Image 1 (cartoon, rainbow, N blue to C red):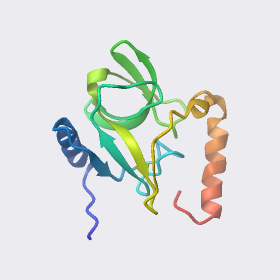
Image 2: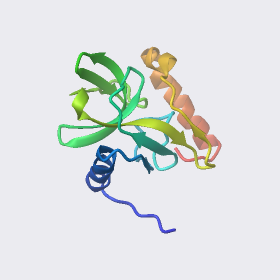
Image 3: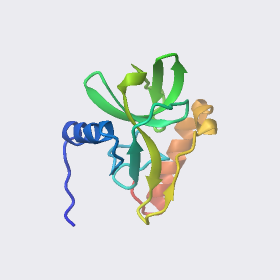
Length: 147
């Protein structure tokens, strides 16, 4: 099977449409903002539309004319705050109806599937994240894996 790479606006617009129809979507995300839990261009994710959202969920959201795949770090009524696991301080703010879908499974290259965890410890040790990500990236480099 030939690999097809599409611009985010095209791919994620189609993903949003399919999720809106109630379908599940499996895709390979790009980028490093969800390291170490989702490795861009390495892991695949399964997304599903849902109304049940809670702090710790990883969601695909569309706001400010762009899509982001980040973790919910706070919810206040209809408003939420997102932050990538690989980010040190950048956050996005949006509304519940900006959420396109929720990650319900992470699939590794060897086809192991697991449900995403809420990453409580990771979210509450932001002051250590810089060092943990540095160690993670060094380890990956030493073991000749991607990233």
